[in-house]
Structure formats: structure tokens, C-alpha cells
Image 1 (cartoon, helix red, strand yellow):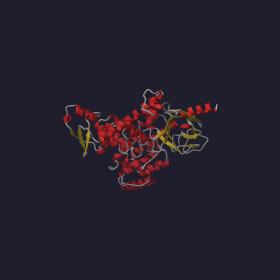
Image 2 (cartoon, one colour; image 1 turned 90 degrees about the vertical axis):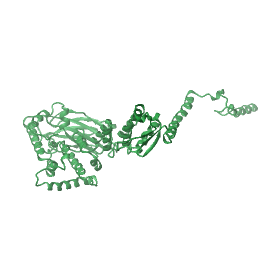
Image 3 (cartoon, helix red, strand yellow; image 1 turned 135 degrees about the vertical axis):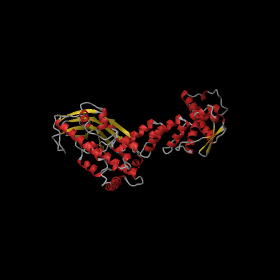
Image 4 (tube, one colour; image 1 turned 30 degrees about the vertical axis):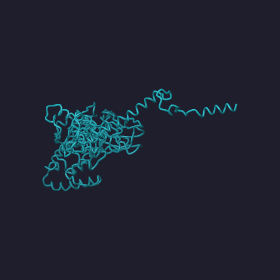
Length: 492
């Protein structure tokens, strides 16, 4: 029995290890059953080398044909550099395809000298553009993307143009937004231009920057200031203050300092100019030096600045705004107040989107962390004292009349209407929106001291700091329109 056991163990120990075969010791036998693999294993064996081969082939083509220029049949010269290229690859470019297939003299030439009229294009950008014809992937750096876009547009490389656009949209920041927006306008990338505008509307007031104020053009600033989507922190007076800083930096671009110092320096500079104009009786915006800035300041919603005493005094002291503009707004607001008090204007009765977008009060609040908050925005709003509360993931509006003290007179009308839009936004470190929610335009009717939940938030979507931005309209648009027929408002 022991002998049998020994023989059995000996047989087991002499068996070839799993996965091996006797025929591996000899010349490989193709008919050996040990070489049979499962379908999945065979597919992996077939697929893996093929992927590697494709990648290797791509690198080989790029290195051998493009970088080394082997078997080149055409030489391209531009900006003091030469490229030994291949017509069959260049024909992927609409520019060269038209050149070679048409009746142009270049179609039969072996050496072509390119004229580069676009100052954004340099030799490095052409290197990337030509190289993209020989490879599938191109690494684009934000610092180089505009030059490469310019080259891609000249050569009509649709794929590279699209890739440049996607890179730009993903890398918008305070350092790139202005240059990207300008380039997008020049090269027809409307989607990039739109993204840049959205970024600026969200970040101009919430993340102010000296460098950004210096770069923003008058045209772009006008577009931002007139937009109902400008994220305002805290009230319209802060928009005026931002414009003062911006105009100062446009007039004194050599100034270098921190954002904290900027307003003080701007006020001091404007104070000197004001003293120089004292005898002339004109405001700063009426001078020849500041005339280009007039279209921007005209889009300030002055009715929501002069409704606060402290803000009105600053406006009068600065003497930047022409007195005719202010007189018109004062008169308009006085008539509106009389109508609310004596003609029982209870506020908007229906959604008038155009009126809301052009004339609504813009205001906002930053919540640094989760918690309980209650606040009101400064200014006289025709007796409508609105309290805003954030608590337990709810945002609540309350029409305050009797229960709490407030500044200014309070309307005791049984019911008041308010038209509004509420937005909540959070950002990443580059100012890109990572959380965005809106109520859309609504009309809310409140009795005295009534409160109403206007937004219920999903805590999973909240990222702090949280920016709350509102548009409000307190009085009837139709009745305001009647008064504006009697009051001449600033040109738009």
C-alpha cells in the first residue's frame, strides 16, 4: 500500500505545472491543445498589441514624417522657419486643399512662402498646427491657445479650432477671460465669447481684481453693467463704486497697488480733478477726458442708489455724474412715491420680463458658511420693507410692517406685490460656477407681516461660500411708464 502511494505521489510530482506543456520543451506545436485560450483571453491578446501598434505608428509618423521630414514633397516657409512636409497630409487643411486643387500657381510649386498677416500667429503656433496634421492628439496650454487658434483659423483646421475652443472654455479665469473674449470675437467662437461673458457677469462684483479692472474694455464693461444677470454684491451702489475703481485704472493704467488700496487712491485722484473743475460747473463725466465712459455710467440703475441717504451723499460729493441725470432720477422717484402712497399702487400685477430685466433692483449677499441669517438691503423701497431669512436650507421673504423696527416709512396697505428673481451660485477657485440655481421670475403677493418660503434647497447641492443674488421690482411697471413719459431719462 505504501509502495502504491509512493508511485502515485511520484506521478503527481512529475506532472507538468499548470499552464505548461511538454511540447513547450520542443519546437512549438501549433496543434497542441494546451495552447487553446478562452475567447476573452484571445481577444485580450489580439487587442492589446493592436492598441500598442497604433500608438507606436502614430508616434512613428509624427517623428519620421513631420519632425524628420523624410520623403517630403513640399517645403513650407514662414516667419523665418522651414517645414519639410507632405501634400497628402497638408490637404487635411482647407487652406492647402484649395491651394493644391485649384488653379493657383502654388499647386505646382515645391517650395511655398506663406505670408502671415495675423500678428497673433508665431512660428511656434505654426509648428503645432502643422504637427496636428500628423498626429491625433495635441496638448494645448492656456498661454499658447490663442496663437494656435489663430494659426488653425488661417489654415482652416476645423478639428484644431474646435479643440482650442474647448480648451478656452475649460480654462477661463481672471488671467485669461479678457484675452479669450477678444480672441473669440476675432475668430468667430461664439460659444467661447458667451462663456467669457457669463464668467464676467458672475465674477466682476463677487471676485474683484485690479488686473481685471485694467483689462476690461469700455465696450465689455457697458455690456456687463446693463445686464440683469450681473451678480451684484451688495447693492447698486457697489456697482457705482466698482465703476469708479475701473475708470481710475483706465485713466491711470500705471497704478500698481492692492485691491484694498484701490478705492482710497481712486477717491483721492478724483478729488483733485473735482477741485480743478469747481469753477467750470461741470461734472467729471462731462469732460473730454471722460466722455468715452459716459455710455457705461448711463446704465447704472441710479434710482436704487439715490434711495439710500449715505449713497446719495457720496454721489453728490463725487460729482462724477452730471446733475441733469440726477435731477431726472430724483423727479422720477418722487412721482413714484406719491403714486404708491396716494394712488394705491400695490406693485406689479404680472410678469413683464423686459421691465424686470431693465429696471429691477440688483442686490446680493454672500453666505460664508452654513447657518442662520436674516438681513435687509439698504434703501427706500416705497414702503415695502423686505426681510430675507436663510435657515434650515430655506430662503424666506417677509413683508415687515409692525413687528420689527425699520428705517423709513412702511406701507400699511393690506396687500403688496413684489416681482423677483432669486439666484444661488457657488464657485471654484477659478471663478467657474459649480452650483447654480434660480427661481425664475415670479410675482409674490404678501399681506402685512406675512412671510413666504421662496426656495427650498437640497443640502447635497450646497457649496459654501454661497452667493445669493436677487432682482426686485416693487412698483407697477405700467404706472412707472406713465411717469417716465413726463420725465426725461438719460440716453441709452
